[in-house]
Length: 130
Image (cartoon, rainbow, N blue to C red; front, top):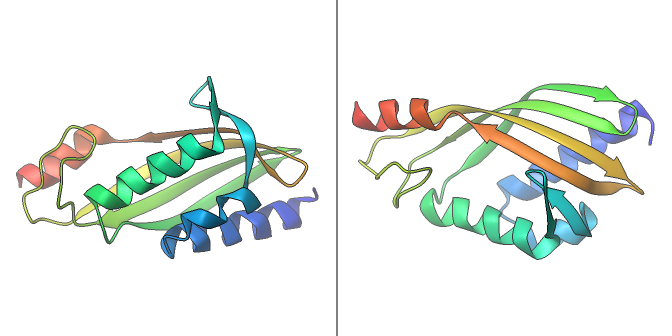
C-alpha cells in the first residue's frame, strides 16, 4: 500500500475508533493478528477497545504524528477522556485525562497484521491524583 493510502487507511481507522464503531474492525484488522508481540485475534482487539470505552466512555484518539516505512506505520496519538471506571491501574476521580499513546503497526493486504501500543500509565495516575 503506498504511503498516502496507509495514511488514509489510518485516518479511517481512527474515525471508526472515535465513533466507537468496533464492529467495523474487520475492515482494519486481520482475523489473526499479533497484538503486543503475542499471537491474538481481531476479537481480542475489539474486546480491548471495548474495555477502554467501558472505562472511559468519552475516550478520544487524536493523531499527532504518523510515520510510514513500507508496510509499517507508527503513530503518536493524544488520548483524552474522563474515566468512570478503573483504567490502566488508576481509579476514576471525575477528572479528565490527556495522555500520549505510541502505536506501531504492520499492514498486510490492507489490514493490520501486527499491532502494539504504549500509554503513559504513570502520567494517567498523576493526572487523576490531581
